[in-house]
Image (cartoon, rainbow, N blue to C red):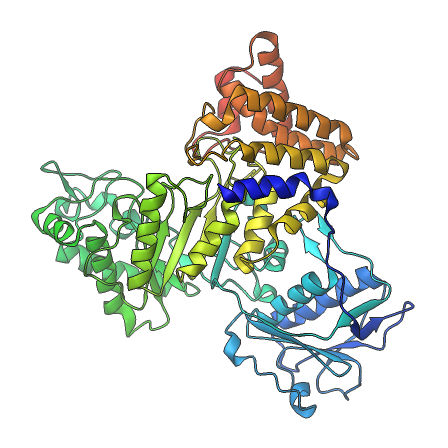
Length: 589
């Protein structure tokens, strides 16, 4: 509750807050009077992401100052004014002691050394991330969406003395919203490194490459084996079940088949770093005597799954020492087994689907949240390879208002505090995107996964100002109002709430409608007005589904809803229902 209250307070006073903290006394004068003595220096053996880092730095300095710094290799003669990128030979010849080796693939050091600036990171992504850190933290650059960025004008461009290191808390950071998936440059600038981004060599590639993605038992032990090998499938109520079912994981023939199949996957998918061996998205766990006995002895269905994955990981470890093997702790398998421990090359991805997302999971009074936290603590004690599959939208309806902004930071901090090493934040990933507040959620989630301790009020204010212009205060007031609906610790928000949920009462809709109509009237231009109308879609969606709108208004509202949704390119209103299917259902062309 405290998070939601604080969010309301800070949003109510956004207009009173400065956008950026002022710089300290300058140590380096990079550009002044339209001129600069500086140049960018790269290693002779610079990898593509380091060359791209130089290009990005050059590009944004030119936008900020109008000056284009030249790029040189480090086999050129040294000058007094240089921005040294990567583990350059220049560091050794000038006796600048920076060693990137402790910073893994993504950490970096930013340091001033006399009149030089050094940005040195691990390979393949560290130096590129160091450039983005410099631009954000010291120059005020922000990338809000692929189309909307803020690049302040600097005349002159000065930097303070800097001696800082950045190493991400999470090794795997994936925001599974369409708004982050379609533009690799944008994903890289937000330092997202997940499996679903088209990150090329220039971006340093992906931090993880998972194959297959998830719910892989159907691919591992295909359903068409049922007629020949019904014993491979789970025994449920005395009968072997094929569809939407798990497998009989105690059967040694299933294990042998799976080992062979996984080996094929690894050989076929040369870029894969993680192989997913995970349950189907449904029930039907095997109740044969062996599977049942293990589950009862270990207190969880995760026992058979973890033992199964452990055996595959052990069988293939010598041949593929670099490979990790992942499984889900999800639904029936979410609680860890009593004594079985995941091997060191096994990743457990714990799913938060049952939780309340109105209040921080660590303090929420809802029983599902308390149970999840118990499982989080228990898994963290038995594995140091723990990932989270988090849920950040309403899956009943992607457009439905979902008051979870106030818990994003608290929950991510909770994950970090318990040693979680990767977070997958699932939202509306449909081709057209456009879920409720999708651009804002995408931005905040990405920023938090890189730095869980950032100033959320400042980041929220900066986004609203950039994205909604003069309409930002009214949009902020709407967000405050929405999150006030869940201040009561007993009013929860779950990912499958219908539009009749307690926090979406008609009185909220009436006041929310006024704020967003005001925002539409305040919009700077047609582009901003359309962005506000996309927020209005959320109110229209619940009015229409909950049948708050009647008669002529009902028909007109449907037409307006579909006109804006189609203009926005929205393809799905939920995982299972497309916009076109809804239109046909209600008779709107």
